[in-house]
Image 1: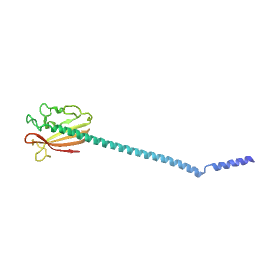
Image 2: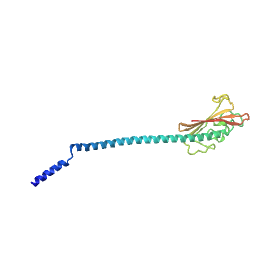
Image 3: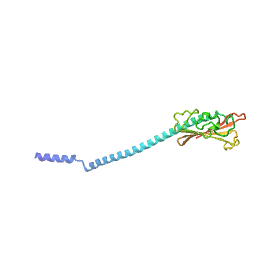
Image 4: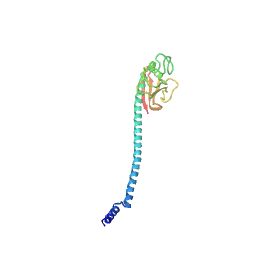
Length: 201
């Protein structure tokens, strides 16, 4: 008798303790939602990380670009200052436009007038005495010297009118980062003066 009661009690207890069909569904449902949330969270975190890295990379490129521009302006101004301290034309003779005999296009130490810088390409960057400038291995300086009309400084002239337009272009790799333009005029006494200065880019 006692055994039957005990067995019955055990069976009823099992029935009461057994999770109902609804409870089993809820448990499975909760497990399913958890996995979906983890997957969605992983995707969202991945998207945010990609966006964040893209923003950091863009910011870095912008900083490098601004730094190159500032450095480019500095080395362009230095070269224009070097050119501006020289006479307009060859002191000893009227020897034409550009380099004269004994002057090299790769060594500025012998440049003694403005038009000697016509067509100069300075890469890697060097000082006037030929010493390499550290930290500028990717930079190139190009110089353009043009004779312009006295009546229109934007018009290139085929003959000397006493006015030169000097343009210095700075590139990093193949990208132009700075362009400075200045005009030099020759006074009646033969001396030179910096007539105007402008920066572009």
